[in-house]
Length: 155
Ligand SMILES: CC(C)(COP(=O)(O)OP(=O)(O)OC[C@H]1O[C@@H](n2cnc3c(N)ncnc32)[C@H](O)[C@@H]1OP(=O)(O)O)[C@@H](O)C(=O)NCCC(=O)NCCS
Image (tube, rainbow, N blue to C red):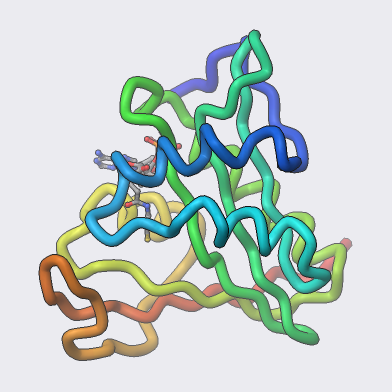
């Protein structure tokens, strides 16, 4: 998969919230409201990155929360029409690199058991299963796998 050359990655701003919320509603059965993105944009422990098209419209995003030397990939999604083009991989690679620069040594995330595309994405980036939370998700109820990635030492 290759990322279309028209896609750029930049920090999200308030202007992106409406489009991120539109992508979110299609991507998840229990979506975050727009207010969640808005609130996190001004939170010092959160970093939201967007992939944007040639018109500077968001086509994907990644939300990272950091506490000391640990971080969580709290959300990542790509607009349906732009999937399988390497966009999530690019967002995740950047998030992991920025986390390392910020002193993060361990990154966690949760993923639905049935979410094979997301699990393949995380596996390809070195995440490994370290736990399982029973009935963690709703709509439908489903277990979450807890994945962890130990960040490689900075060169
Ligand atoms: C999961 C999701 C973010 C992947 O986005 P994407 O832009 O299509 O992913 P990419 O094209 O960057 O793929 C990256 C890697 O993920 C894997 N992958 C992605 N989609 C896949 C699929 N449908 N089947 C198998 N592997 C897949 C591949 O390993 C790929 O690696 P490669 O580049 O070496 O081939 C996207 O499907 C999505 O938005 N899903 C709905 C929201 C969601 O489930 N988010 C995750 C919540 S935990």
